[in-house]
Length: 214
Image (cartoon, rainbow, N blue to C red):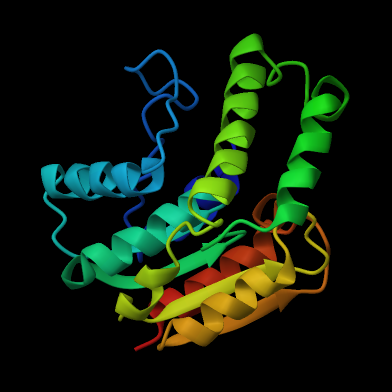
């Protein structure tokens, strides 16, 4: 489980944790295949908000990683009245060509880089379709994923970035911090993209401190 360290180790006396997996990822079914239309981040944001309403949470905080970070940015911009605070890491508001090249390279070596129990045919197919979508959006949308939404975000926002993260260029986090009014940035001095897994104690401490601040 990718976010096991957060789900199991965060203080349950202070937090109620809702771990959401967008339809088509992991074991979230239906659909049987994760689809990537041009607006898939916006669609996932609407689905996530609908889920929280169904669970009777009218106001909540967000933690978003990677595509989940982009989805969180759109959710916070579209439903500002629902969001208390937001933490994003490895999040993009646009697509950089170096990121596409890096993900493309991983796709060619994915069987060597991803654990056997994870690297199923479904995983490989989904990865390929995601990379192809990023390439398409880089062309048809000039790489824009949600840049115009950033100015609409009003909630306190913590932007976390791992030093020399090869999946997300440093300018991504700089762009977020310059365009989200009530934001701050924390830079991990370690390089991995999955800092929440490699350094869960530090990551959870930073997240807890931010969320509990008055």
